[in-house]
Image (cartoon, rainbow, N blue to C red; front, side):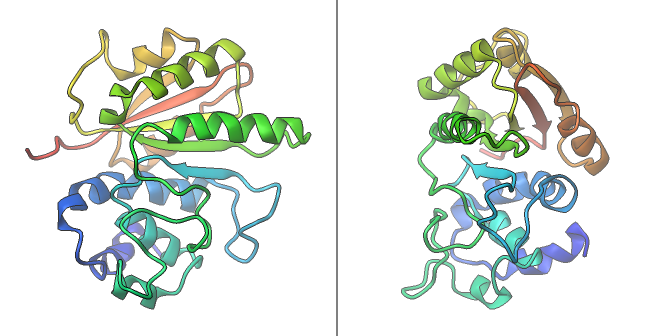
Length: 225
């Protein structure tokens, strides 16, 4: 299956048109993560040595659900009842109801801090192989909680973390030198890529190195106002 074959699954999810731009902005990065990078298994979604993927940008989860369905984490027919009375798929993902979902998210600004806690917990358990990937939107970086998480992670050299920021220029406030520099000034390694170029996204994700957290800024088309 390719990302083009995921599109019919994505179009089965209706009823959240307000957040459609959030979903489409993440689709290619999500596909690269699940198809090429993450060490996860739909038959063992709770494997303690799996990589962890945290969708901080959880207010537009349609593409996330479609990719999870494409990869076998959930039945395709679940996609036909988004936010229905008996549906496990809500407008925000629920980790207790959706296989493969690590955190319940949607309120902006929480994902990276939860990623820090996850990485520290894995290290305390002696699990040094799993990586923690956190997908954020550029507007989330306006939240002070994310600034604190960026600063802490860089200062402690928590190198199990890779952040991916979807940049569709929707943030109210910018940062001198751009998004990548915001992380780099705190000791992160950083790379900016075309968020629609799968090979570039994969290469950027795989540039993570020992001794520092890593961020990939994935630039996509500007969000329509």
